[in-house]
Image (cartoon, rainbow, N blue to C red; front, side, top):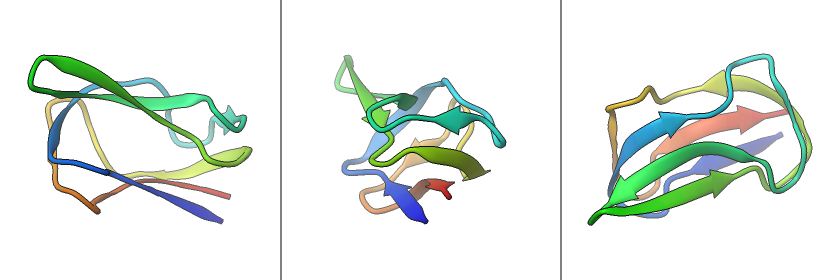
Amino acid sequence: MAEVRAEMVANVWKVVVAEGDSVEDGDTLVILESMKMEIPVVAEESGTVTQLKVAEGDVVQDGDLIAVIE
């Protein structure tokens, strides 16, 4: 099981995956926006997205849980 967490304060600009989706290591899960830059958040291991904790328009803080991959 891998927890994907935010590494900065940012807005969730786009959610690319949904719960139940299969992902590979390196696939983009969500795209964050901070200071007019788009920052992709990628899966760090292959598996299935079992929990997605953010929605488009949310604001995440450093360390916030974005998704869980099993």
